[in-house]
Length: 200
Image (cartoon, rainbow, N blue to C red; front, side, top):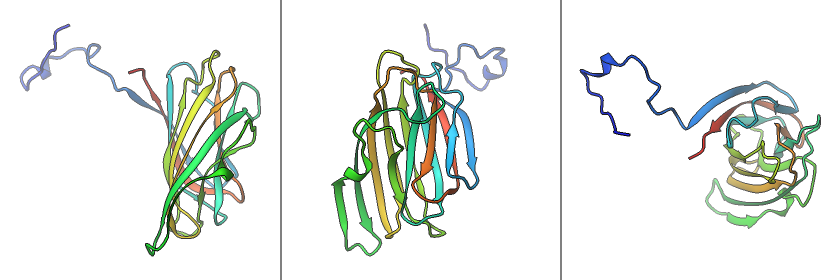
């Protein structure tokens, strides 16, 4: 197929756009959070896209140093898919006196069904978490479902913390819902955007 280059004279003559490339990423939904213990996205996670991406924007919580968590639904009514995951972090304090890169055994699971912690957040007015979560091939009924999280936060000890968690839902049933929670208190505000990403 020949590449067509449009110029200022020809663009006004276009009558249809079917042949123009469409975006590889589509915004599906936006959840604006008001205070609650969980945020649930339980629609439009299906076979339309092979990858779903969730953008967490300025997630603010009520309890200092509580964990933001994620869990998945595998066709039933509960968010309790069996997960195995690993977690590590890198951090630096505001005074530039303490640094660290470490495996984080308190935020991983071994065939666990509970919510998976993905970062710890401070609750001061200026403290929040931002990041990205990827869920791969959730509609597959052949393979396990991989997920990867990369969340940055200002934690309760005034550290800049970058938390990385990755793992898999050890189920062949389709994953059709995702739930964000907090280990104590509530999620008070923030935005979660869900995108679908097409095959490359």
